[in-house]
Image (cartoon, rainbow, N blue to C red; front, side, top):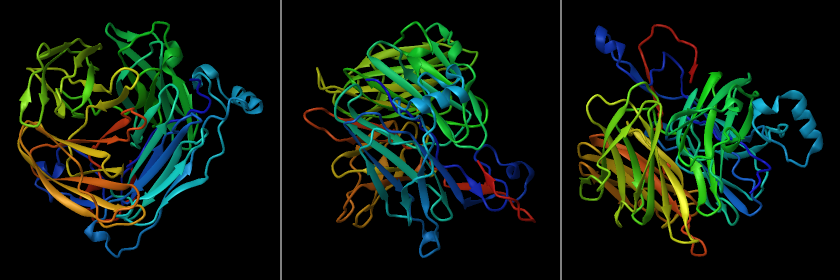
Amino acid sequence: MKRTTLSLFGAAAALAAVTGVAALGGASPAAETGAKAPTRLPVQRSTALCPAPTSSDVAETTYTSFTPQAKAQAGGKTSAAQLLSAAGPAAKSDAKADAKADAKADPKKAGKGAKAPQAAGKPVLSLKEPGKPATATTSSSDAPALVGTADGALAPGWTTQQTTVIAAGAGRGLHGVTCAAPDTSFWFPGVSTVKGRQDYVHVTNPDPTAAVVDLELYGKDGRIKAPTGEAVNVPPRSTVPVLLSTLTDAPTEDLTLHVAARNGRVGAGVQASDEKLGGDWLAPSGDASPSVVLPGIPADATSVRLVAHVPGDDDADLKVRLAGPTGSISPAGHETLHIKSGMTTAVDLGDVTKGQAGSLLLTAEGDSAPVVAALRVTRGKGDKQETAFIPATPALDGRGTVADNRPKGSTLALVAPGKEAQVKVTSSAGADGGSPVSKTYTVKAGTTLAVEPPQPGGTKGPYAVTVEKVSGGPVHASRTLALPKDGLPMFTIQPLPDDRSTVAVPEAEQDLSMLNR
């Protein structure tokens, strides 16, 4: 399939506090000095960027935006959260736009097929109140990337989900992505440049100044030479797609992509399309860590492939376990994994779940180096196969949300790799009506609990699901959305990282300027 309009994925949950300095993690200075501990306050502003969904003429995309209802928000004044069209590549047939793009940018620095930006700023979706999703749909092959902000009571935990059904062609299937935050570094284990597969990395710049990024590829022997991936220019408030196979002359199945910003901040995501296995969005792996969790392998997975990479200077030695419904086991023949520094290793785990939902746990053995990792999961057989990805996902510190859920189509995977934990799951009202409902679950130590979210009463339209940790050890979560069609097991898997809806604000004697991340 030839891409004519490609855009990028990028960014949500930028954090802000009205007073004080926001601290997102690490040890508190107050704990070391004996000073009063910082107060956690809701963020006051969030930023979101969603990718251009597809260039297919036989696709339909649903956007679902949601902010969880909080007690402090009840009856309070809110301001609308809005998503607007972003600047992206113009249609390939627009000769004037092509000439304008060539005059303004070096194609080698802007990715293969980069075109002039489309007009930005058209409103696409507005969220009016917490606790009730808002939706919009499009079947346009020219649908652009979306950029937006949420203020006040709509900012804490604001989440937008993009779900695309592609009926035919390369990449046919269900493509889903939750918009993520802008940053300066993203790792994508599991990308490919082999024939029959097209992996596009979409890089977007939400800021008013240009950004410059490097696209680095790592294989089993280390970094691969890719000169055209160096110093890629991303103009202000615009998006650049790059086909990964144009960066190297050596087709390789299992690679790790690193998107590193030299200056500025960007959002990044990879859309993978396979001629035989369908496709999906690959979200970035969580931060490199000596031990990682990849939650939510479906019970009926027919093939699972692990791709892991060591970004640092030391080797990694990992213990491999599968956390199932009743406990954790080591997959036969794959009990341990050794990964050399700077290299990518792939392991074919087959139908490792054996009919029971599970999660993969990679645990450091001794003084092991941090790793990034992802799973490629396949369901179905023969010409009825479909693929999705599960990146390493950090634990929920407080709360995580996935915005687009359908009756009987959603499955939550909750894994407690250490101690037993309790979580509260809340299903919101539907976008067109209904009432929310909550249920508390216990996840036993070393197990994965796969459950359908509680169905909201009288729900109409897509609904959101929020997972909150109540007590116990760390909890990691993901959501599988399955929308089978014509015998094809269409599905997509989204991780649920913490929504970072609050920031720590130290005591201050004077009001400080707003801090945005």
